[in-house]
Image (cartoon, rainbow, N blue to C red; front, side, top):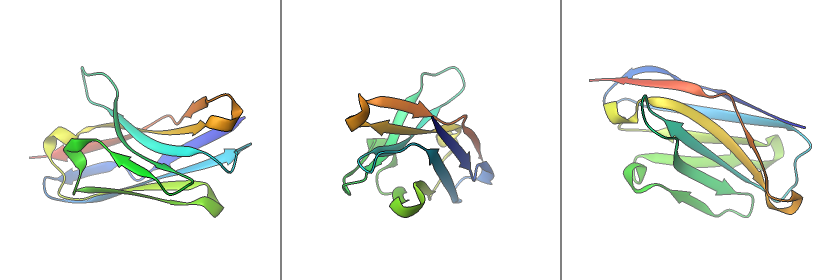
Length: 118
């Protein structure tokens, strides 16, 4: 069983920064992908960024150049540094863990709220 715990959300003004963290615990394969999704009010959950244990990263176009994903494999923790935040970044941010070598099992955190005021 895997537990994902996010932290770092909050309220900031537009143009500000936040750093989200997600710590994974439990049975975790060394080959995995950890990432972030977000869900704004009234909208579907969307992909934000992910980072594979191999070092490969990917971002949705709307955050490229503003957000940076990083990870500490020893701690099974992934971070999302968010700069130049915009009101449209307001959402609940969810951490995701995918383990391709375990049947592609997907685990989710409970989310952390990010609110950007204009």
